[in-house]
Image 1 (cartoon, rainbow, N blue to C red):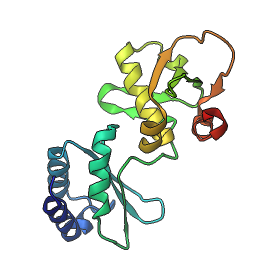
Image 2: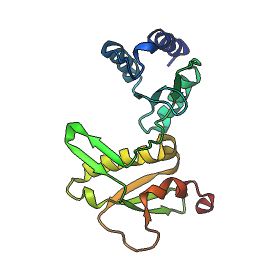
Image 3: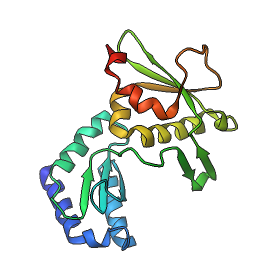
Length: 194
């Protein structure tokens, strides 16, 4: 992607930012935003910012390769009073509640448990036990768990710290079983990675 494409996008965004604020979504403008970002093979979210009224996240869809592209795009973002811009999805306050309306799925992940393993090659695997997912097939479970982990950790930490995750019906041992809400703290514990 060339810088001129990114700069053109941000010029368009500044011209249309008022129509993208949470109280005034314009479907036509949202479609234009979606078309541009989808053509870059990226995802996006608009919502409230952490310290400003609005935010735009341009997401690399969990891909470290595409992360370089989202960083490049966000590095050229303008400074705007009401907007924050992110190159990855941020952790969410209601991370444990997931609604996939199109699939009629509603999940509360607050009771999930995990075990974290570090291998000799420094790779990290998270085993997730989620009793309320037993009725779903393997693929659906993995989609749900990935979304919840992304919401809990934020996309950047998910990409940088979790090499693999697996949904299990039971753990092989009682050692290291922890409530899912502690996963971000555990992944940030430097002593675990020494």
